[in-house]
Length: 73
Image 1 (cartoon, rainbow, N blue to C red):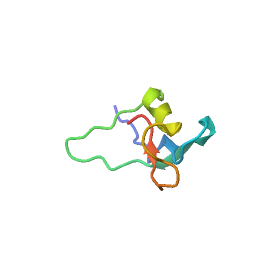
Image 2: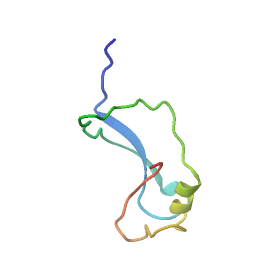
Image 3: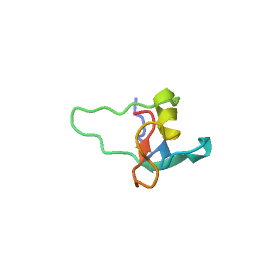
């Protein structure tokens, strides 16, 4: 069985604190898979309470910092 490996992935990007509208679904190149690593196809994902706390600006500082927060990690 041969499966094709995609060249891109989608993710939720949070670049600033705020309402749910600051959540942006973006696409980026798939990171290179190194020796001893595996690629897992994700059928569904979600955001947890810590992600929402970060989005609201209650954990860490996203406002004006230029930082990005990759939700779900």
